[in-house]
Structure formats: structure tokens, C-alpha cells
Image (cartoon, rainbow, N blue to C red):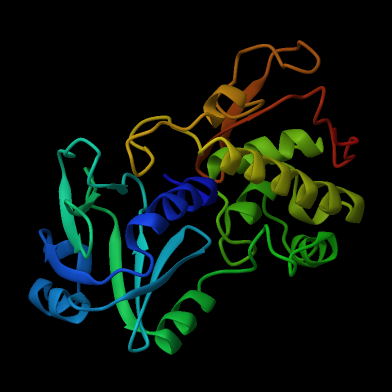
Length: 280
């Protein structure tokens, strides 16, 4: 599933293609994408609108349009966008025909789990606020804020960090990566994480997310950038997917298990307790 860095990479790739331009025609090719709105109604709502800007909230991509309208794409497991210059995808579910472009911007989704919601800015803000916590790269998220959420939860640290209401945009990849970097085990009960541990986790989350954004995200299966480019973060993983392999820090074998229903990897030597090791 695309996580925050992948969605941010897509947003940045779409800015020169959509921002400031008029959606001259919209084709919805899969009715499941826009339910409960009918495809033709969705097309009429979007056609003729100017894209004022592209925003991101957690894993959601927002097209902020004129006339106080917002279109929200949630890519979920396999959603992606392809610009006019990219090869034609195999599972196109929507086409944006845009002012000044030689071809359409296409939304592709092999597994058809992605969604497109359309509403006023107030409706969309209320919708997202009810589902999402603070942005991990924003000023409102810090060690104290995370510690207050963790100390009230007796489930695993990983389960709490995956909860989008605690912090928006994290998924399996970057939770494993951040826990390793902070030196905290993902299966530790959240209420056992110290305040220092929470501070280290915030710093680790920010570091891994920013590095992933800088290299275009992680390409594991379906994810590609808008022009078909692959990300580079998968070459830099220190924890995710490394179960059974030597730890890059200490050389001991990385462990793996299912935690919060997700495959999880950690190092028992580098992540022994809630004691957070020094970053860097």
C-alpha cells in the first residue's frame, strides 16, 4: 500500500500536470471508484473545474478545485497515476483530460480498492479530521504528543503507530523502519514506551519519511511515480522485509513475526526494550 512518502511523491509529480489547469473532461471508467456518487454525476461535478492546488493529508491526495470543491483520492493498495508521457497502464479507472496537455492523466488501480470522494472543503475537512491524527512531518506532532497517546494504550506499539487517528500516513514499512532506528521493539506494549522513547520515535519517523520522499518512495510491487519511475527507498531498508537476514548494525539475525496482523521485522539486539538508542 502506498504510504505517506509514496503519496507525497505522486502529489509532487502531479503538480506540474494539474495545478492551475482546467479539467476539460473527466471519464470515470469504474463505478466502484466514486460510490455512492454515480459515475456521470462525478464527471459533471469535476468537468470544467480549475485545480487550484494539490494537497496531501496522510495517505490521501487532495485536488483543491474552484467553487469550493475538493476531490480526494485514496490510493489504498494498488492505486497510481500515470502522466501523458507514461506508458498506458493496464487497469485505468479514471482519466483527467487537462487544459494544455497532449494526453490524459490516468488513474490506474489493478485491485480496485482505491476511492474518489468529492465534496465541499468543509465536508472534506470534517471527513478527514474524523479519521486522521496529526501529520508526522508537521509542527503539531512531537514526542510529548505521541507519549500521551502511547501511555493510554496497552496494545503493541506497532498497532498504535499504524492507527491513522494517532498519526497520519504511516504503514507497515515505515513503522518497522522507525522502530529500528529508534531502538524500540514494535511488539512492546505501547504504555511501556518512555517519554524519551517517544521522542526518539518521532525523530526516527520523520527521518525515514523524509529520506523516502527524497528518493521517490518505495517500489515493491505496483507503486510507480507519475512518469513511471521507480522509487529508491527499498534499497535503503534497515528493517522492513529483512527477517532472517543479518542486522545491518550488529550482524545478528533479524527476527520476524506477525504483529497487529502485519509481517514485522526487528533486531532483538538493537531493539531490546523500551530503551531508545541514540539516533544517527
